Length: 155
Image (cartoon, helix red, strand yellow):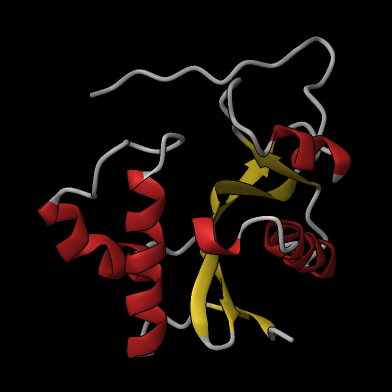
C-alpha cells in the first residue's frame, strides 16, 4: 500500500526545494499549464522567489517519499470582511499519481490551514476546460453569484 504524506514546504530543505521545482515544472508541461517546461530563468529563481515572498504557503504531497503533488498558495485580504484569504494559485498532481485522492488531500490540507488561521475563504482560479473542476465543485468551491470571472493583463 502506498503511503501519502503531505508537508508544508520548507524551502531551505534541499529535498523540498527540488520537489517544488520538479512538480511545478511538471505542471508547466501539462495541457493545463504552459504546455512546455518552465523557462530556464524561472527554474533558476523559482524556489528563492517563493521563499522570499512573505505571503507564500506551499504544500507538497509525497507518495512513498516521491514528489507527487503540490499546492502553491498565497495569502490575500478580503476588504469586505477585513480578514485574510488563501488563494490556491497552483494545484497539480503528477500524471502517475492522479485518481489516488492526492488533489483532494491537498485541498483538505489547505482548508485545514485556513480554518486554523481564521481565514475568511479559499479562492482559486480554474480554466473552463480543466478536468479538475469537478473535484473543486465536489470540495465545495462555487462560481459565486453573480458569476465571477478572473481577468488578467500581461505586462
